Image (tube, rainbow, N blue to C red; front, side, top):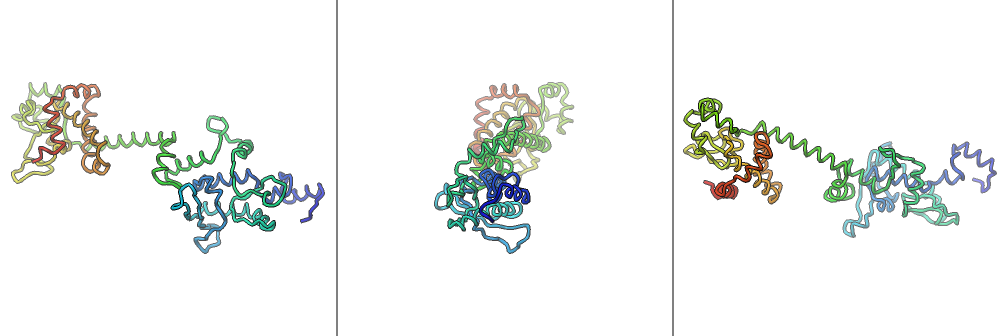
Length: 382
């Protein structure tokens, strides 16, 4: 290439190469700082890298395959100083769009690396762009985007991005990294704990989605419990009508008329409600046919009935299970208590109001409370 070109010659060359936007030829040959910033943004969006990691990337890549087609598979050697000496260096395999992005980055900066080598300052840095320094030598190019803030101002002016509300959208590496982890819902260059607690949990979109998921899960659990809960519930009106016409309630429950007054008087009570047939357990029984199941199993037993007199005990049981949930491991909770708690919640929600439950808490007797504590501690097991 000649060292001097007339103004007309430069214009013609730019037209020939379709480089009208470049004020000088080296703007077409070498990436500028805004193009380098764009490349780092792409790497954050695609791989969730920190800028410090991108600044250390080199073209010393290993091919994870022998193919030379459009689907490269590269192995990047990552340097993460903040992890400390033991975990500072790691390798990551990139294929598909990620592999093609690395190919584009290498091609974008290839001429700059070749020029640096010709000047006697070879470099293997992947990130390489014009510094704007005209003094020559090593200072012509930069190999790291050390202070992106001034470049970002120019980048935003050119990009003109707008947020959903029409205001100017300010893009930073930190914001892109947060968004990438939130959208992908998985860790990137960090642990599951860090990704969850630092990046995703504090994000408004994550909170909105988590709230919707929790509400949906609770609704599904309650619906499942409604179908599977076997303990039946009687109201004050049911009890009043049974005292006048016990046969109607007997038919409804499938029991003898003689058992109705026993049920109403509390003589059939268990730790949770009343048992209509202690000798016909669907769960476990001893040689004589007596039920030996946990009192919590009553919540899923067709022989069990809850009357208004049992409400204080059931509310107290619900409160006790909530306390247990915060004291045991998730594995223990899921194994021993979760199903019972869901059934109990469904039973109370379907048959009582919040006001009734609050009132029931004030009606719990000391004897009932002590009995409940002993049952939960398994001090009354047969």
